Length: 229
Image 1 (cartoon, rainbow, N blue to C red):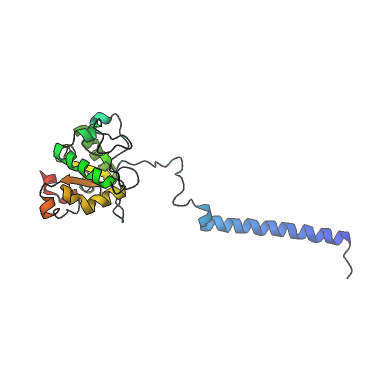
Image 2 (image 1 turned 30 degrees about the vertical axis):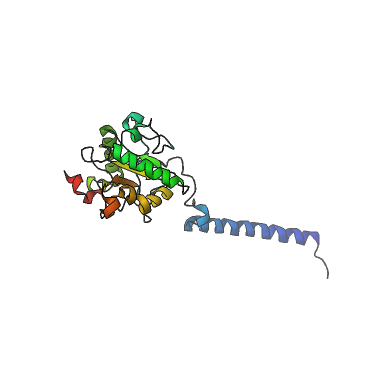
């Protein structure tokens, strides 16, 4: 087979190169126009600089589980531990943490008895929120209204400072999931009961639960008659 002269090969290469470059440019334009998935951030990717990745309250989720962070934390302003803000890793055994120490004495005793027994199963109770000052509760409610868009929707997640059992020291939010699962199964033996279906982390003391079982749960705090006082 006779090879073409150098001049012919050079002209063929010069013809093909602009054609290829043109095709690549057209394909790139189509990909951008269609919003190809490869050009979009994945759901698990880091937030962009103008996105706020911290939230005060949990958004409702199909699983009914709170996010990995504590359900009532973040955006604290001037609030501190004296108001009931909980330091990371606090447990029901931390006597020096006001959010724990200011809980109702009988509730705290039941939590500690349950925590000691749960430890035998390799489960640790951490306190995401316990006792709160009125100022802390009011701040949470303001944030909830801003987050959920209305007072009615916010009431499904956060009570007022007047009605909240956290302010009176009668409620505690427990984590992580293994702890809430353990308490959901065994808590009634200690008088510890879930009160709201939409808050699997929220427990209160019901003294007769060991004999009668825990009472029927409300769908959310807005259904609780105590919240309407």
